[in-house]
Amino acid sequence: MEKLLEIKNLCTHFDSRNGCVNAVCNVNMDIHRRQIIGLIGETGCGKSVLGQSVLKLLPKNACITGKILFEGKDILKMSVKELRAVRGHKIAFICQNPAEALNPLMKNGTQIMESVRINQALSKKECRETSIDLLNILGFSEPKSIMHKYPNELSGGMKQRVLAAMGMSGYPSLLIADEPTKGLDAIKRRQVIATIRKFTETTGCAVLIITHDLKFASAICDTIAVMYAGEIVETGDMEALFNDPKHPYLMALIKSQPCKGLNVLNGTVCSLIDLPSNCRFFDRCSYAAGICQDQHPDLLTLNEAHRVRCLKYV
Amino acid sequence: MFEVRNLSKVYNSGVINKASLKAVDDVTFSVDRGETVGIIGESGCGKTSLAKMVLKLLKISSGSMYLNGEDVSSIRGEKLKSYRRKVQIIFQNPESSINPHMKIYDCIAEVLRINKLASRKSEDEKALIYQLISMVGLQQEHLNRYSWELSGGQIQRVALSRVLALKPELLVADEPTSMLDVSVQAQVLTLLRSMQREQGFAMLFISHDLDVVRVMCDRVIVMFMGKIVESGTVDQVFSHPCHNYTKSLLEEYECLR
Ligand SMILES: Nc1ncnc2c1ncn2[C@@H]1O[C@H](COP(=O)(O)OP(=O)(O)OP(=O)(O)O)[C@@H](O)[C@H]1O
Ligand SMILES: Nc1ncnc2c1ncn2[C@@H]1O[C@H](COP(=O)(O)OP(=O)(O)OP(=O)(O)O)[C@@H](O)[C@H]1O
Ligand code: SF4
Ligand SMILES: [Mg+2]
Ligand SMILES: [Mg+2]
Image 1 (cartoon, each protein chain N blue to C red):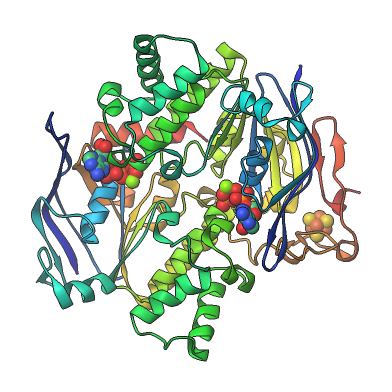
Image 2: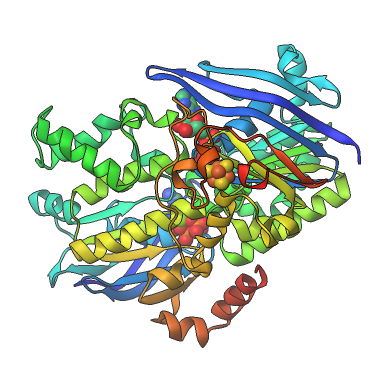
């Protein structure tokens, strides 16, 4: 498979009054064409920041280092003009908070058509039709009436899907979707799965899905990456990862699902400001051993597809 | 303890092409002290509109609501103020409930001050805030930040800490954990349950996650296009659904396992 995006030693930190917040630490990740890759992990562990770093969509106090090669070119070194050609066009980002992403003063239809128009040279009528089609495949039964409404007249889940329609309108080669199923009922969620699948098959688009929904992730992703406190702690094939989780964090995560007994993982994640020099999961790990106290584990390759950051397997 | 009778909400939109939409249609239900009632249903079926009416953030089109036997459908002034303190909500989008220009410390302190739970800048206030944030699993460094410097889940916990400080009689939770990963969700849900046991509040719990509803709720209401189409204990509804919509919802949900 052809590599579409290559993230190399990506670090993103924020300057804040209390010190430097290390939101993403040394992340390496490859995304291939047509691949659907899921990014899961504790809230606040840096998933959204990682996604936003790819498009440099971060506030001024952020500092990004490393390399992000998209079709061979480093996004971090691109000029404003080059970056604009990539954003929305080749890489689309569906952000986590639909309420903030939509312009409250413009009708939904105008916003979707606008993003269709930017990406494809179409007449106004064709733009309109494309927009309606997009809303249709995203499970709206009355797309026309949605087009005439303002964002605040829609429910949470409806806004989420309008945003998805805008993201898909440019037929990007990479779609980054931050919590695309948040606030959707089971039936709509299945539609989103089917839509994303069909979209990757027909257009060859790769998808990076950031999600908390483990069932959704296991239903749609080929590959999973698990983050904890800014680092990737485990990656591999979806099947292998969920059937045979290796990292103690992932094991605990799976057990804390309501259907698996709602077992609480005690403690809190370490502060991203003063990070420990040993294993970042040490305080909460039920497998912690002596060496874990003074060593920081590297990402260890268990087999070709499965890698884990834990000293237990050294 | 809390009761809703024949509640409806009609949205009128469009100045020239007038259109009206019945978002909530003739809804009747009740919640008891210490009880949790789940509300499930299609996205856009009127759950948030219903929640906002219960909170009196949205005008009721018709119908009535009762808290401890007292009609609260059209209360005003002091009475409304005290109602607002007794009935609290945790929103789907916690960002919207937190002022981005205020540090988290002040966001929490504001609630304590307005409700006179602690005097401004006192040691008591500080101690109470530290206690609240540790209850919801945040650290002291977060207090010094602004809401845009926190992750979604962290903000949701700030919102939760503000609500718990007020010891409400009725808590409406509108997808309180949709922003949280499953391990933090487990923490927040267990926290909610234990706070409910301690404080005895009634809870209306809106969620799309049927597993969560199963573990959290005593009874459940299924809404479809603004109407209640089915209700009963969680066991009844989940094991023997009657309405076609409930059946297809459960089926689709079971598919993802
Ligand atoms: N502008 C900022 N300044 C300082 N810190 C920030 C800023 N933006 C985010 N952070 C911090 O970076 C960390 C990672 O945030 P991020 O939004 O990526 O989390 P996340 O993994 O997406 O969590 P969630 O699942 O809750 O959305 C958090 O601890 C957050 O507090
Ligand atoms: N301010 C408004 N003006 C006009 N219509 C509105 C307004 N707010 C909501 N609606 C409409 O009311 C209906 C119900 O919306 P509501 O937000 O209550 O749904 P919901 O059940 O909470 O959905 P979700 O699960 O997606 O959050 C939707 O069809 C929506 O389009
Ligand atoms: S390295 Fe040690 S402390 Fe860290 S996750 Fe592995 S076993 Fe646990
Ligand atoms: Mg996020
Ligand atoms: Mg809602």
